[in-house]
Length: 282
Image (tube, rainbow, N blue to C red; front, side, top):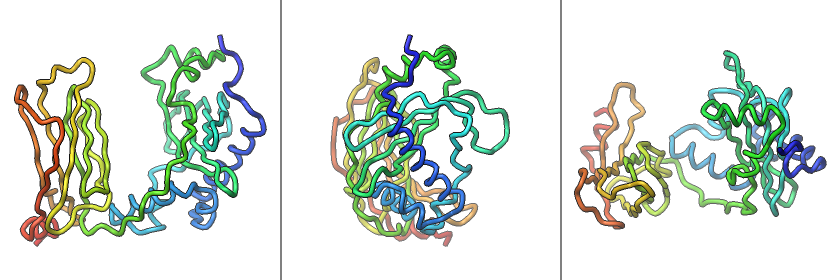
């Protein structure tokens, strides 16, 4: 049984807690200057690009979140570990987002990167243990073996590069993929990169779609347990900002169950004036 916090470094823990507390206060106070000071450079650009792709106001949109980030008070630190210029802490307990109800015991995982001016906040993830009651019980008893053997809960050692800046999108779009038994990579207009695995979900297209020609590249691979005969669909929908106007399907690439598909390809679609008129409610 593992009874001590994993990869624990008291000095590192204190530094990361201070960074998180500063970042959380910036979010609660809607303080853009403070948020900029303590948020990793690549994360700042990712957030701005997403807001631009959603046609939301920057920096106001940073603070338009459904719930305040949880405080660490009352939670137990079970990991504070670094790997090169990256670090990750894991907290366990009743993580309270201030939205009511009775919080249960789960994990809060926060990533940090080290820049020239010190540690900076990168991102946080709430990990529900509702489907893992045995893990919840183990951690409550001081057994952290689940955390030790889960790669996603360890710092990677890789600092992500700052992505290119994306201007405000003219049209909001999402790429939808249905790919049971397969993994699918999709890139839209050489900018917006997506990966789906055994999924039925949609992701925001960074930069939206363009008037006229749009490019799509894709690759498809089988996953263990798949038959290679499953149906597949890749679609792009463009969304209106006018209430009551339905999304426009601008692109569709699909195969029915049993049909043979290409493992990779490049294609595209034309977002024409008629589609634009529908999105604009004309």
